[in-house]
Length: 107
Ligand code: FES
Image (cartoon, rainbow, N blue to C red; front, side):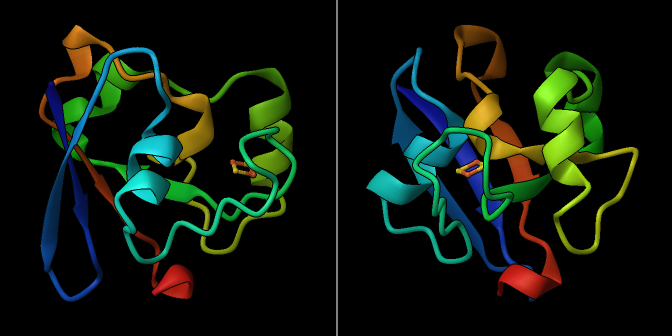
């Protein structure tokens, strides 16, 4: 199993285990992580799974593409350098230990 860490605004960290091939959003919702509502179920159509990728992971995760970049325009508190929709980040061995932060609007 791989580890993903979700960090709340107050600094509280929640580590969850996840298998390769699922999305960061699915890792959050399956483990009841607060702040990831994922209203559209991962269809890249709601922006309620918005996260900030930790600085140390930004390069490995990469920037949003195509429809994700368009949908991010509807998210609150977007940071062009680190915002991603977590349903569009697929967990792989390369992302074991990934750290993402929850925006204040989703606390
Ligand atoms: S779950 Fe709706 S955009 Fe990610």
